[in-house]
Image 1 (cartoon, rainbow, N blue to C red):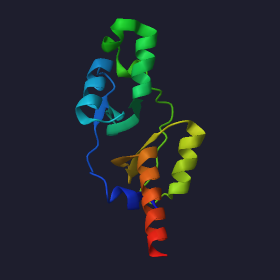
Image 2 (image 1 turned 45 degrees about the vertical axis):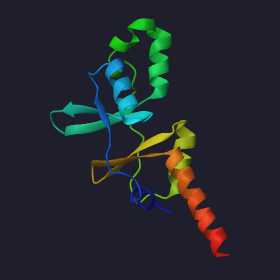
Image 3 (image 1 turned 135 degrees about the horizontal axis):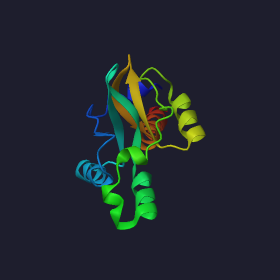
Image 4 (image 1 turned 120 degrees about the horizontal axis):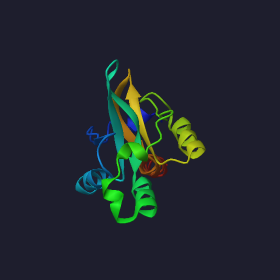
Length: 141
């Protein structure tokens, strides 16, 4: 099974946050969209609008633990590591994506095809797809 197989069943909308936004804004975006992770984008003169990282519920918790009530005013850029974005493509296998997630201790991966952000795949998406495939196989038998 490929990432693209799962993406065909998902809404193509990706919620993003800019590096210079605050934790408060990011948390509101997650709540309003009922999601637990945002793709962090930065505007780079030479490359345009670029995905540089992920901001998750864990980052919100870390901000509160480190900054207390002032966490809502902390910039996303202070919490997101942008050294190397871990991502996948829609042609990657689910096994490869699970390996990336396990090795990097993450639950969400941006899907980037031809240098363009197309979606985000989560551990939950993968688990649901595997369950569905297993149920389909057992019902066919």
